[in-house]
Amino acid sequence: MTQSHNFDRVARVYRWAEYISLGPLLERTREHHLPHLTACNRALVLGDGDGRFLARLLRQNPALHALAIDTSATMLQLLSKRCAFAGRRLKTAQISAHVADAPPGTDLIVTHFFLDCLAQQEVDALTQRISAQLQPGALWLVSDFAIPDSPLLRPMARLYIRALYLAFRLLTGLSQTHLPDPQSSLAQAGFVRIERHQKVHGLLYTELWQRK
Image (cartoon, rainbow, N blue to C red; front, top):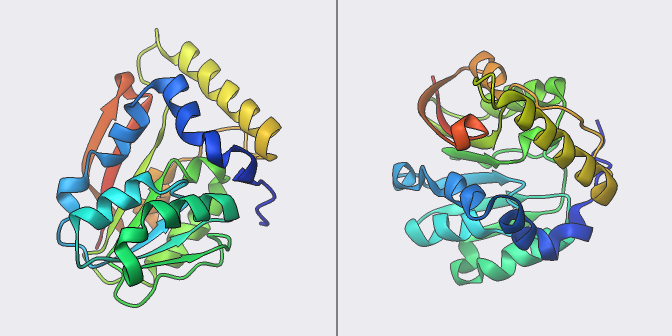
């Protein structure tokens, strides 16, 4: 798969678009599991956008090294500027996640609101490939949207997510139109879920998985 979408156009307004959409809830979702990551030494961060989460992670873990991957040059510029305090602990690469490798010793993978840009078979392939490069005990942190279980909320959630996909198709060329199932992908790739937290009755969730 070639990633034809381009987030350069929305990079500089991405933060404010989030707040207009759901206030601080997306940011709080990303940061919920930060206290569980204090022992991590090396992170591979896929599609962190403008770097707000990565900046928090690097400040919390003064010895942590990170490789941030994104196809958007503008997003990486914003991320690098926000994380400039980390100096040589941060590396970036403007490449597709489909060809990105986890550096040796990586013990944390981060995918916040990123896997929803991929089709199910792409999520399957990504998790399998990255999992093969990790040691047992490595963590995978994933946050994303979901359709709530509540029959009353499901129609509204479906409409909201459909509108999000339409907006990103118009602004970035994103071709994906429905949410994948990263839980099945991670389980098949040898991970077990150890933490889960959700907001807005399940519309937003964040999970921590561990490599067996």
